[in-house]
Image 1: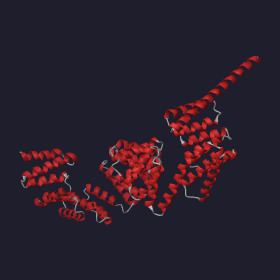
Image 2 (image 1 turned 180 degrees about the vertical axis):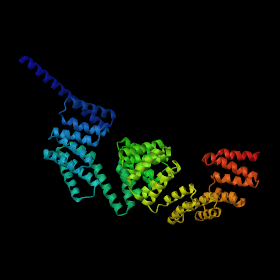
Image 3 (image 1 turned 60 degrees about the horizontal axis):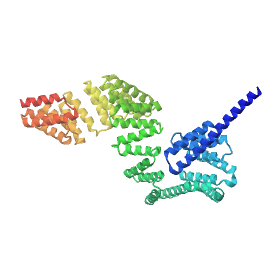
Image 4 (image 1 turned 45 degrees about the vertical axis):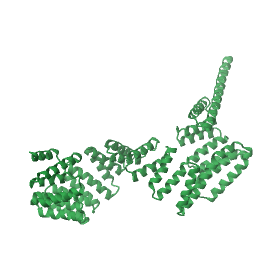
Length: 556
């Protein structure tokens, strides 16, 4: 029995030894591939190093080196997040508390996360483990102070600590050759960055923008792969209102580092604000942010409006829905989704979201506008005047100076043939804005439809007085002179004026043709009808059959 136990123990020992040897071999292969990747930057070497590190961890999960080096490569390859990389390095630190490199790697990732104090703690602990052979942790700690100086306000204390650790680490280079390569790889770049930031910020603060620009231009010329220098230059150009030129620098950053989310946000915002024609490019930028894991309701919201701009209504609805999924109580998202539903003709769905936006009511003035939008659906689509009136009255209660709500009430009562009520509300709107030609135009329509010809003429003339380029007012006044008074000459003058203001006005051409037809000016009537037909095939303003029928009658 004792012999059997010995055999089993020996078998376990041999298996354990075999696994450790295999783990050691894979770790060596990983390190060799890692070194080749650092020298040549071949993706195949990176993949090989990652594969061997993973195998080493599986075979022997008790070697700290495998964890922190694997974390470094996986993060560089974009396979894990910064948080995950830091967590893996923390595993290595807990596994081997006296491992200097584990602390350095963990501190490195903490530094990338902006946790400078925690990073310093790791670097200082590494120095304590080997005070006389600590050039690497000292130099890395000095770089930590330098990075912090680059990203925060200048501090003499931090700068002096940077100098202390840099000088003391440099003195120890003689006894720690590994530090020399690290110093060459990192220090020059970071110190240059410090100087560029220091002088660039200084010149910007004293409004010496030309000097600041020269600092950034020289830095870019010296290191044309440093995204921060391009960003500094772009930001300065934005301050100088040179948006188009700034865009070139931000696009250069995108070319160098397509994963820089802060730069992508800048590009998307600039395109959306100043280059509205670049809709597809802006959509692509916001989509890229989502691909990079920047799941944000605001991104979906912006995408929704961009899709509306492209008249891709279904995509717009889906984007607004995703925004609401992230932020279900945002009234602005409900309002935008409702608007997208209106564009799709899904009025019941739109009503629900408009109601929700009104219920949340973030601001009385804004909510009054939403009430008007919902009222228009009940008035124009649902033919429910009672609810429409109630909503418009709510809008006025929320915002007593809501001019459009009074206009809406005037339209409803005019439609109900209640001319006195309609005029009351139109006058209320005019009390708020007495120089609004459109309201006088609405008064003109209401008067004309109820046979108040003289009042209609006065209203339209007032509208034209306020807006001499009001093409609709000229056309409608022309209709009154044509069909109400029988003054063909004045009617034609008014129709021609409307056409001169708006050459693509099909109805004005149609009405001018009618006037010519009455005075038997057949050639001119045919010309106006043909023009109306040509325009109408684009605008769909009139019944095409009506135009064709009148043309045929003239030819007959």
